[in-house]
Image 1: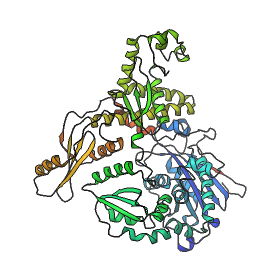
Image 2: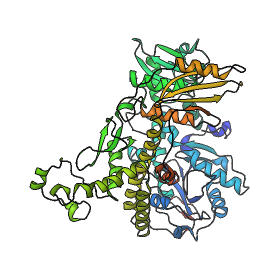
Image 3: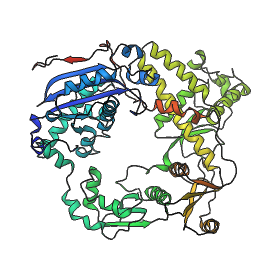
Image 4: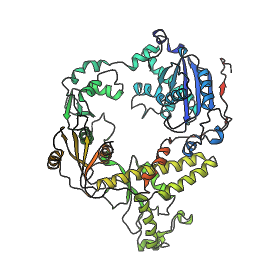
Length: 591
């Protein structure tokens, strides 16, 4: 919660507090480059709805097709709607005086950020509202055993919300109201009854944190990795920081609110630190230790070797399949994927443009004489090589196009999907358009990652140099995509001498036959982000490092727009006149 109301206001009981629950729809993710298309809000007090507000907002430009697919809001719905210069004052009038209400949103920085940006643009002084983020509050109250995440779509059914979130402003605001009431009910069981109680709850230090604070003593103020361990020395949690002392100390302060971390502190008996030369070395070491120790409190990076990949099989009539950690098969792969279902979406995206066979049995001359064609052949989506209707050469030509999609040019998939999404959106078949979007998103994300990984892990050696604030240099050696070593060069010291020492001290790396020959995809991608650091210089690159001109990375802007989308959307109709709506409740609110 923000520090805005007076002490007297903060002592107000929650059941006497007026909450304005707001949700926005926008044309994108940043107020700097995007605009509001819809505002929805619900005013509640003591569980009663005092009023509702809704208006479309003319964003001043076309709505991207991906946003239309996501929300169901089209240009025709907003063309006659008021601009933000009219909609924002109407919303602020609905909210009343900032002294009398608390502004609530799910992921409040997003919604409140857009509203504040609009106020600044219009030179309207933003009211000094107390704000409450239900997503942040849920992360403090709920455990992972109760909900898998704290998204609105997860919390609404958990708390039995009467309205299903559907990425429309008013419905999402209504769902957030029920989530807010559910959270307040949980807080009541913990003795939280006023705004000040709520603030104290959000910033409390547990007895375990106070008791175990001594574990942060004698920690060096340098970059490295820290490991929380239990009484048997078993690693509970592995983390990384540029300042170990400050980071470890933060676990024993009110700023640490994650439930699983609070529980971990209660059983931790020691903290081990490993000092590293550079932040990249520390970051890579963290990944490797998480993979090795499998600490139970860590959530990420524990399944680095079990990622899913899509590849073309090696057989007479190749097919697309999903596998984990497969041996390298030329360049006939894309990935990694977070799940098998995500990988399957990418395969379906390819099927929409190429008539590759989808059956799994191996095709032989003998099997062709006994098999019968499947329904896909009758639909023209397969050449039926299983019964000999398609020659090896004809089928290989299709496979070559698939290889081309994977490695050189993704335009065919992107163009075909865009055309299909526009057709479906124009017919208001939004659910089907969303399915096309999800398949394209999965394919583009995975093939973009594959392009970056494939090009980088081929390089036998890269030496990079990053200037330090003190005037020295941070040198790093990378071999086949694996961190091999790092050294710091002091100001005035001959850089070449440091580079020569680095080459001698760096770990030798022998590439394997796997897709990634020397490390996990997480390590490679972390190193790639480091190499893209502004100001970093490439001292040496062995062999060619390049990317295809028309590959999936060339479509990154389309991918960014696609990734705004949320998988579970159910667009609604009605009420598209674009006018602000103030709806009366049974206890009365005048228009």
